[in-house]
Image 1 (cartoon, one colour):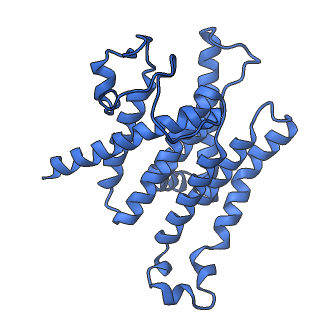
Image 2: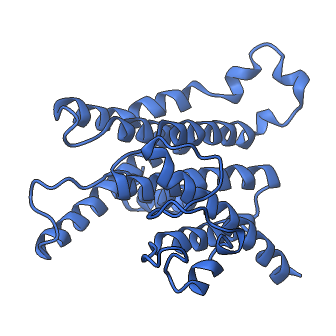
Image 3: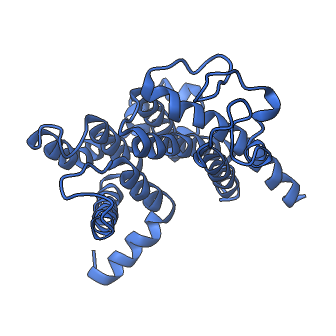
Length: 269
């Protein structure tokens, strides 16, 4: 029975991953996300049996049916990642609503990762969705918010359910990225990175948020050095920072408590 449930959740995640691919490729180009899917090369409309998540890519041997051009491996990769991520989240032991919100957060982060990597652009719509999922997750995770509508409408309840600390954490974590963005005149960081880091602070809190930034800077530096050594990039080449912010966020979202506990034992705070 558990295997069957995992398979259903994986198929659901892969199907959503197929939609995430649409967002990844269309939002940075300001294209509509509605309407029939079409070939990226010849614009021919794609039939339904060529849109089956994961399977269609391999049935077609990685090539478009209409013009035989090579398709990006991004498509099955995103679908597989989303399916695996959904299964992982579903069996983390949270309540159903919390799991759904985390799945929403992961979906936004997957779009941010690949769209920034591919187009060096993070859509405002995706950031807005990331903020909404994060705020709702913080809301439902607070024990004070489990008492029904009458409590929500009572005096002072909202301020306890949405602590000012979360807003302050968003400002604190977003500040370093904003300063880099401002001082470099958008050459080192984009405004999308600023918004992304602020929402990270809201979701994770200031301690885990700063550690997520630290992980992002370290992984970004290592990746950049490797590319320089391999002569894939030059010293002045632009490298999107969004994927590294996503890496830091995911690390602290799922393993933040363990990492903070290790740091507390090592340094005594």
